[in-house]
Amino acid sequence: MTNYLGRPASAHFKTLACIALMGASTYSLAAEPANALHGAMPPDAQQQLLDSLKLNAAAPPQGVDAVAWATIYIPADNELTAERIALGRKLYFDTHLSKDRTVACATCHDVSRGFTDHRNVSEGIGDHLGQRSAPTSMNAALMQSMFWDGRAASLEEQAKLPILNPVEMGHPDAASAMAAIETDPSYQALFRKAYGRAPTYEDLGRAIASFERTLIFLDAPYDHFLNGDNKAISPAAVRGLELFNGKARCVSCHMINSSNPLGTDNLFHNIGVSARKQNFEVLAQKGLRVIEADSDPKALDKLAIETDLSELGRFLVTRQRQDIGAFKTEQVRNIGITAPYMHDGSLRTLWDVVDHYNKGGETNSYLDGGIEPLNLSESEIDDLVAFLFTLTDVRFAAQNAAAMREQEAIAAQKRPFRDNALAHRQMLPFEQRVMGQTGLQQ
Image 1 (cartoon, one colour):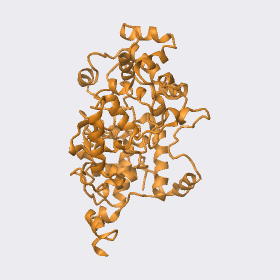
Image 2: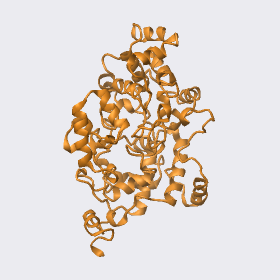
Image 3: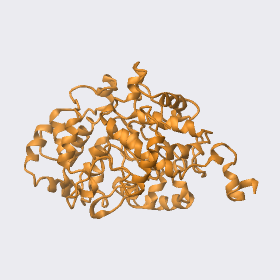
Image 4: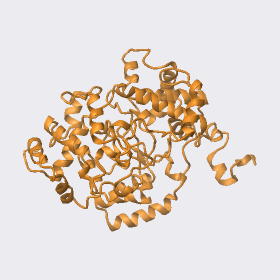
């Protein structure tokens, strides 16, 4: 096993494993001050770190077509300006947007943690836990829909919903949120500079979206390799790239090219994650009854964050049977520093992710037809993971290397989703259901 830089991993397995077992935080890629709210780096420190990333909002971001950026990714009613970005940045880090002033956008989308929070599910006001893991806000501007179920069509709409969710930021309505931030008199002038009018909740959403459009990170070792630097990634990662585009079939949903740099098909698939703990038929019937009673977007947001109906995924939005248990194909960009994985954060490492796919996901009546056993060997799994770590922007190289070491240590001790019998088709999924754990061989 090697890391993405090509260094042998076996030499430090034992030491790292001991560190992990002694209680070191698996995903604490930045030190947490004692007074950190909900474990996040304090807002001022995050902003200092953000400044060190040297984002350039004056030009179309690297890796994105300039025409597409101007005509597709920036809406006509929210032209990207320095004033709107400055307002959005202030709002992004402002805890006044939560009812108890302990949560900001940056709490769950922490600059020091790959613009996520490294939790299985996110924590909101009053220590309430939601039902889903926070996706990174890096490159979110390039996604075609927002949230794991795609219930928001734009960054502007996405930005407004968590503020009004009872277990996230907790304001009862838009008026409450606006009253909270208006305790800071500087907002009046900032809103007028940005939008030429008094502060409104719609413009609040527009401003946060404007700031998030600056968070584009597409300069990875993988890109350097494509541009001709043959030493940018290790031989293991080169083999992993071949697997990604071939035997491992990752490219079926995670195609990466100049017109689609994120590595997502922007569609929704049931890959069986929820099937480990849910009866989809019963849950779907319950979901339909609830949705028919109240289909307001705010009510839908509550269902997705507060209840077990969250596991229905895209079905909550479309009410179509084929969407039961289906979740959005997430980007593979910067995947090394955005663990844990999947909508519920149930997969701790990229080895877990590959193991899940290698065995053909989790069998259920709604499993996507493209999910099937991959027959990857252990060395092929290691190569594929090595490649995935090359997709992290070079500005996070140190965090990426630390994350790989942490994940290597965990994988060396425990691989809970590995099932070689299913992966290599020594057993078919129906055998366990019908005949027990040993299948037809018992």
